[in-house]
Amino acid sequence: MTTDYDILIIGGGVNGAGIARDAAGRGMSVLLVEAQDLASATSSASTKLIHGGLRYLEYFEFRLVREALMEREVLLGMAPHIIWPLDFVLPYFPSLRPAWMIRLGLYLYDHLGGLKKLKHSAALNLTTDSFGAPLQDRYKKGFRYADCWVQDSRLVVLNAVDAEELGAHISTRTACTGLRMVDGHWEAELRDVDTNEVLTRTAGMVVNAAGPWVHSVLAGNALTAPKTPQIRLVKGSHIIVKKVFDGEQAYILQQPDRRIVFAIPYEGDFTLIGTTDVDYTGDPAKPEISDAEKQYLCDAVNRYFKTAVDVTQIVHTYSGVRPLMDDGRGKASEVTRDYHLELELSFGAPLLSVFGGKITTYRRLAEEAVNRLVPYWARANENPASQMPWSDTVPLPGGDILDRDYDAFLKEQVERYFWLPEKTVRRYARAYGTRMDRMLEGAENLNSLGRHFGDDVYQVEIDYMIRKEWAKTVDDILWRRSKLGLHIAEGTKMQLNDYMSRLGKERLAS
Image 1 (cartoon, rainbow, N blue to C red):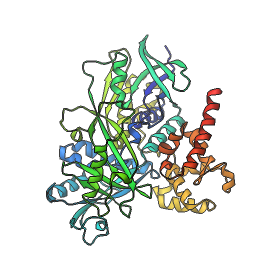
Image 2 (tube, one colour):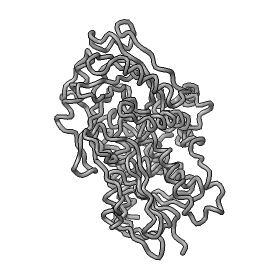
Image 3 (cartoon, rainbow, N blue to C red):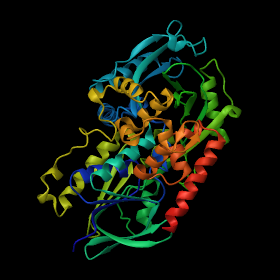
Image 4 (cartoon, rainbow, N blue to C red):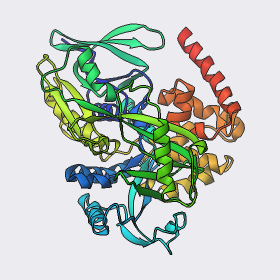
């Protein structure tokens, strides 16, 4: 029997979007459904790092670190607009980890992944180096190493954009409310969250990439098996405060409990501080930072920096639930960040479930997932490209910057759009890369950008997010497609809310 799609993917986080992109690029027909917005859960609540995970070396996860370091280089080349290098400063505190251990870890970190684009680590004299200026005087020595920063939710959106342009169907605010086997293929009941309309779609294969809900998707449809892995939900929380230090460098802060906390320059005017690791048993859709977590993160900063912070200075918080593989380790911070793909064939058609993982290795995970499914794809022999991994060499939308030279690209855009405030050009360039030219096509002055909502937020951008990036609510726009929520006035938010409400009513009426 012919099915509607070759693959149904449940979950619009980074893993689901990455798998949709990879599969569509190999010629498969793909439907991705997400009950809320793209990156609405874990994938927009990370520490926003593309990194190997220096601390994982302590747990001897050398393969995971090596894979992540190699992917760091690949992703930097694929998306130089939303991913960029960052210096990390590790102040030395003798009672926590000996210097020889840190040096050994950094040596391995430099060499495990075949460092090519980023600079090697180095020891620092914090009494003379400018990186030491924000730190308390008791910190005399330290180390510097390189990793990368990512706009995490935009990474998800751009994978979905590329998947759609390759032929995939992306359906947000669409919940999979039932999944069953019928005549050797999968039949899914899908419900439109806004209208409650229910429809049925069929697929030859299913990928369960539901993140914190991966196990409940299986259990709710009687699809668990004796070998089905267990997951451990771990909450990670972050706080955002007015910037604690000047400069573009980040800091990695060792804590008395042997965890580490990052302090990262964020959105120009702020410092992002996180993360925590707390076992979680509540609704994965509604994690909230606790008072204890807020204090823990403030204390982490106050152990190191001259500028102290307290909970009254927090301007924003966010929390996410990581669906980690339950490897039996005691502390939540020690649980592996590696991923596991569970392929179940006993139901009559392939069902692949994704357990664990981290944002840095999402592309490798996606590639491996599709590799596992290709042998069961009925039309694989008609599509020789299906056997060939491809996603590491093709830029994400907007990432096709000449020679991957972002600084040269930005300079060119500032000159081209001289009539825009430079701050706005910089934001557009970082968010959309070369796609900002499509968004601004035909625009010649501020008046041609449509309605001005305030704070240099124009209708042309909002309409682009709606038309090309599945934005449907104000939160989609202010916190996932962008971080404008930190920067704009209440009046601007109110105008945006009125605009989106009117569009939403028109959409439901049509």
